[in-house]
Amino acid sequence: MKYKLFTYVAVLIGITAVAQAKPLPAVVDDSEIIKSLSNGLGDLIDKGNVPTSKKLASQLDKKTCKIDLPTVSSEKPRNIYDKCADSVVAIASVYKCNKCTEWHNSGAATGWILTADGVMVSNYHVFGGKDVSGFGIRTRDGRVAPVVEILAASKRDDVVIFRVEGKGFIPMALGPDARVGEELHIIAHPDSRFYTYTSGRVSRYYRKRMPAKDGEGPAIMAVTAEFARGSSGGPVMDVNGNVVGMVASTQSIYYPPKKKTDKQGPFQMVIRNCVPVSAIRALVEKPGA
Image (tube, rainbow, N blue to C red; front, side, top):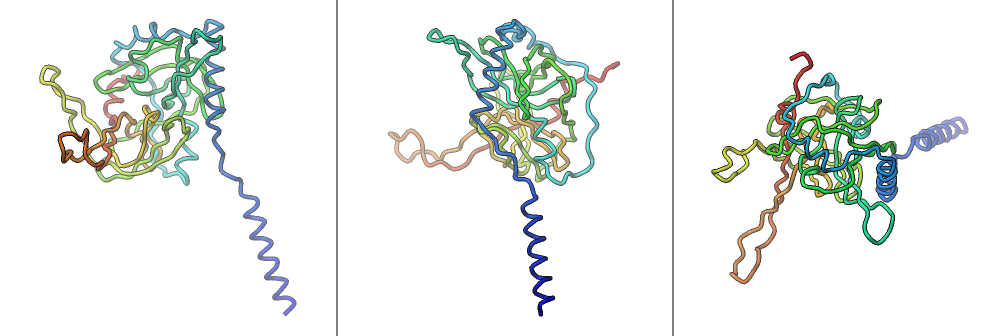
């Protein structure tokens, strides 16, 4: 009896030790990320190391770029977040008001790393139409780097490929086109809630409606995974961690109002629009081609 009791206690102690030894998940400090990105980018601008938004805007007409792309992964990771989160960055621009000397953040969006030498991807609308002192990124581990060049862009497909200063980044591979119904994963920064993970499936591909004068609209990948403002530019990944799309926009559907005096009827659902990976590939040429 004593032997059985000793064995039972030993097993409990072993289980407790294993449970205590398991590290806690990393806790995201949203305020610290915003502060370090704003201050870090502001310091770089003060040193004269950051191109202005006007200079970058003049490069948005570049159609393609030549890049050595990472190899596609065929192995399913144990945890998709652990594998891919370090390849997701926060993008921000800063400005100074006329009331103080501090740098202010004009809002954060999402981007992701395409090559180890600083080539990254986000939405065209993140960069287009802004008059700010400069753009920069912050990696998950706190590294801040300025955006120094636009390599290729498509306003129609809402894609921009850009380069930041530095090397040694952790890239993500471009995967194959995802089929309707396939599982997918997103890591993004909705409303400055940094490194938020959601999952879902591809719900359909459709052609965006455009005015007749603008011709055929771009192909859109609709998904069921949730995201919100600030998620723009976030990578949409397959089960192996390859990028199969990119977060772009949302559209809310409301039932028609019953009364003419009502602005809108009851809310029904949100359509979540993403850029398909084929639109990103279209901006990349293989070196030597």
